[in-house]
Image 1 (tube, rainbow, N blue to C red):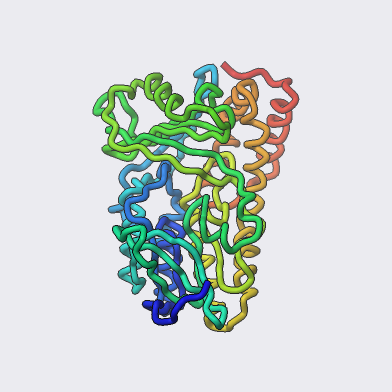
Image 2: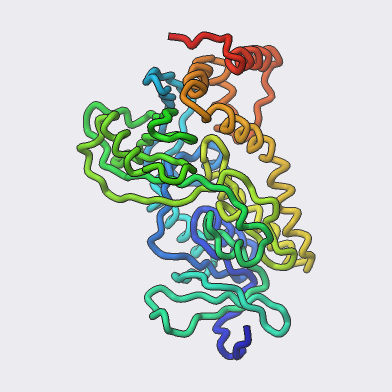
Length: 403
């Protein structure tokens, strides 16, 4: 699109579109590396999220205790029959954050490191006569007929969510991304009769025909939510049902949020020139669990390292190498979780057996070790063998659910 060079208001080494955990982390790391970076974000947008962050995230990204609103010491897996399995975290805990405050903390930290914050909506990327990226956005509060703000960028990080406009405009096949839709309600936590140190996960077809529902405590507040990819399924109705079943119907609702969540990484994260994706925009959410904060922040860090290399060397292949490095570490986990979701979430009979498998102490130990440290556990061969044969028995239907 033709435009006057005088319309370009500023020039940056990098523009990061999206101020969630992925974008804020990318902006922070780019600023720390010495680059001039602009962080463009829609102010006030909060993603529906259970808010769990594992110890590895807290360590790797230096999250202060002030951001931890609660600590979960166990999870309760609830089957379609309402039978449940408690999975204690022996000797550890999972941090819980409220995304309303956690995301803003990350954005402030990026600005403190030197990133320039702008509130506004990304519109498109134009190109100047040299082929450089011109990021066009509408500032918050600006009339729709007002001229767009244009800034030049040597590189762009698209971290603008599952329906990323940066991705759709610049990366091939970004429109092929498959998502579930998540909806949750933040409510006041009950003062009595409520365990604020336990996350409840419901594997019940009536609450989600293909995913799960949750009750995650955030200290003074609690996230009650559900996800599903089935069109026409009432997420609001499912949450209302869950709140009634969990004796939470009378709790005051503070806010509600909904958003698509991708469950498979895109096959390409860059445009081969100067754009790279991160977080939900790249499809980096764990299948089966829907966990995204750790994978988003790691994606932001990985993208920032790739952009830094690009800026220093001019080698655009650095962007493609970022995806390879990321999936070399976590691709196997994504694959295994994807297989789990495909098989175990298909109907209530399988969900019942899945929850029953979670009674096994070897399963619990290896699950928590993998989740807490974000890597597959190299456990003793006998433990894996026991799990394999128990899992096989459930798969073929010869194991009887425990009472």
